[in-house]
Every structure is written in structure tokens, then in C-alpha cells.
Length: 173
Image (cartoon, rainbow, N blue to C red; front, side, top):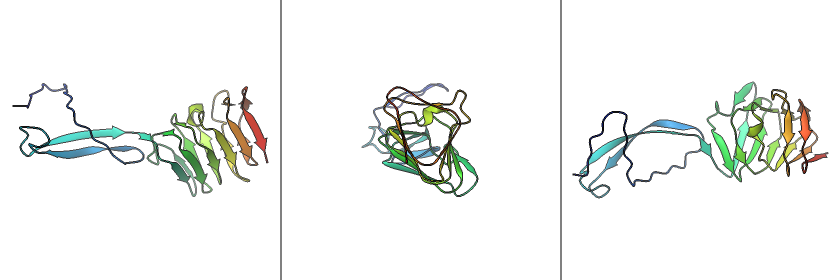
């Protein structure tokens, strides 16, 4: 029989691959039905799978916060990765509270985008502030250092201390 009894707390890996198109923080229990075709000897067995994930890599992420303050994780987003662009709209505040590695542009069109960690936008190529928009780094101990190759553009407001590192650019207007 292909079945193995495992003592509690142990695990066994099989060559079974699962994928999801879920974007954001996802967590839950899922029931996977197996047939003899999937796993020889399984004959209509089921397997309970507990899943927790938090990596997001879509083409674009929109944080639309109409009022008040929301956090990135509170809105269901884990770490944002890849060539993703991020846009902030709405008069409220989004607090980016996890390390992100997205390399696309970040556009703050309305309201406030605040950082709880400098790693939240460190890999973004461009941070663009529209008139009236706020980039709030005041919560960072020591302020925010604009990375090599990173550009801050636009005519919004920056709250807190910013240091421009070698190879970084400030392009007001």
C-alpha cells in the first residue's frame, strides 16, 4: 500500500504540486480529493491541507483607502514582489507594514502612504507623489534612505527625514 502512518508532528512529502491564483494573504483548510489515478491505491481518499501564504506578485496593486488608516497586512496583502506597480488612492492612509521587493513604480495619487519599515519600498524604482499626496516616513527610526537607482518625483509632501544615497534622484515638479 502507498499509505504510511506517521506519528503526530511528522510529515511526509509527495510529488504533488498545488498552485493558486489567489492574490494577497490567504489562509485556510482545503480538502483535496484523491483518486487511484492521482495516487495509486488512494481509491477515492481525501486529504486535508492547511495553507498559509503571503506573497503577492500581480502586475499592479491598488490601495484605495477612502478614510482612516489601513495596513497592508490588514487589507490582506503579504509581501509584494516582482515587477509590480503599486498605486495609493483615496484620502485615507495606507501603512506598509511588511518588507516588499516589488521593482515597479509606486504612485501616491491621493492621501497618505506611510512606512512602518524602510524595506516596504526600498526596491521600487520610482516613487511619484501627486499634488496633495503625502509620503510619510516619520515613523522610521533614522528616517528613509533613498536607494541607489531610486527616484522620488512629483510635487506632494514628504513627512519625516529623507537621505538621498549615492545614485538616487530627487525630481520635484
